[in-house]
Structure formats: structure tokens, C-alpha cells
Length: 304
Image 1 (cartoon, rainbow, N blue to C red):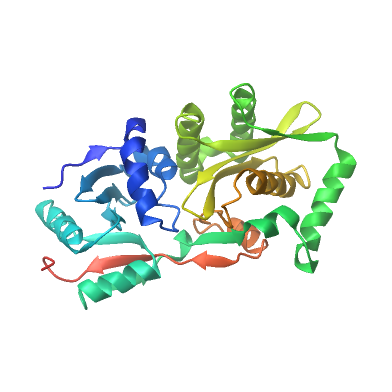
Image 2 (cartoon, rainbow, N blue to C red):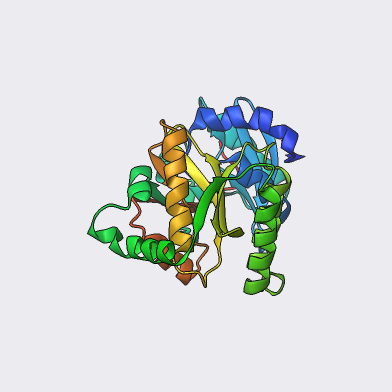
């Protein structure tokens, strides 16, 4: 049996090196996401050989495993994961698989899996330079929104710090009231994850920015590095009634990343979760690529 444990903040010190060795591109292979969502998806983790193994539950309570993250031969680790599912009396399912993961699975265990597209979980990935500069005709509408905001507001952008973090949380509470988070299961789950990011902001190594109109915080965002060349935006909130607030906080934080992380080329703005409005908004920023994800269902009783 694999010796799992619930993911706690102290696990960052051993999980991060395994994630860094894997250098994967999907937002699910990021400690902040695993930790923030661990109470919603019942994530638990273990080290098997030189790999991180994560097991969780979908909203329908069906168990699923992330592709193992590490360096080396994943075949014995996948065998152990398959046996773990068998011992638990559950189907062996791998979630969030990339095309590269699928290629490895088909190589080491040919014809053992079927793969189903997880469109609502696709990540939207952008060139950092494009988000920071918004150059060209395709970003004209974004620049128009920003210019309108600048014309109508005395504004400032600040890096999030212990001194202003509480103001962002107060803004988040107001945002949730406006959007009815308590009555929407998806938004309520998201807010639970957001709360963990606030509670453990420093310990997680998060960075963030806020936008003020006068003295009032009207938008904020948080993120951290996903892999060797990609930054992950975990949270971005703005008051929708203030034209240009979303566009400006997006641009200003991209400028911040560009200045402070010269190794970063891409920004992963994560999934749309099947929300049509969110999908339209993410597509409107013209992603450089979309990280495809698949569910892998094992077709046999045990990997051999």
C-alpha cells in the first residue's frame, strides 16, 4: 500500500523539489494549488521512489490520481498506483493528463488505457510579454478599457505585502457578497481555496498585486512560479462594475512578473471550469497555447 498523508504546509519542502524535477506545465502540478484545494478534493500525497504521487476525489467523489511527478522511470510507480487503486476497490483513473503523459503511458503500457478529453480543465497559457505590453490590433479593446479606467480614476498599483494583505481580503469578502458565493457551490469552494492562500500567503511563497482607485482596493491578484519558464496566476478578482479594472490588474501584474522574473516566458492563467463567460474572457487574451488535459481510464485489472 502507498503510505499517503494529507497535504499540509510543511510538505512544501519535500514536494516542491519533486515538482521542479518534473517541470510539468499543467497547473495541477503546483504546490499552492494542491494545498489550497486539498480540503475540497481531499488531496493526499506520498513519495514513491523519486516521484510525487497525489490522490484525490472529483466532486462526484470518484477517486483519481495525478500523473506522478519526478524524474526517472515512472513505470514501477504507475504499477504501485494501479495496485493501490485495486486494493481500495476503485477504478484506476489518472486525471489531468497532458499529451506528453499519454505518450509515455502508451509507450510503457500500450493499449492499457482509454483517454477522454477534459475540456473544462484545459489551461490557458500566454506569452508574458504579450500580457505586459498588449501590443497590436488584437489587444486594442483591452487598451481601450484601460485608458477609460485611467481617465476616470486616480489609481495606483502596489505589490501585496503583510501590510496591505488584509485590505485585499476585505475586498474579497465584498466581491463574494456581490457574486453570491455562499449560494453557489463552485464559488464557495473557490473561496475556501482562496482563503487558504490568504492564510498562508508568506509560507506558500506567493506574490501578488493590488489596484486602488483612490484609497479603495478594487482588484487584486496572486500567483507563483509553476515551472522553469511559466508563472501561474491562481487568483484574480476585480469589481466587475468598474470598467477596466480587470484589464489593468492583469497588465500591471504581468509587468511586475516581467521585471522580477527574467526567466519567465509564459503565464498560465489556469482553467475556465466550463464557465462560458470565463472561457470567453480567457480566449479574448489570445492564448499562445492551450494545455490540453485528459482523463485516463485503466482498462485492465492490474498493470504488469
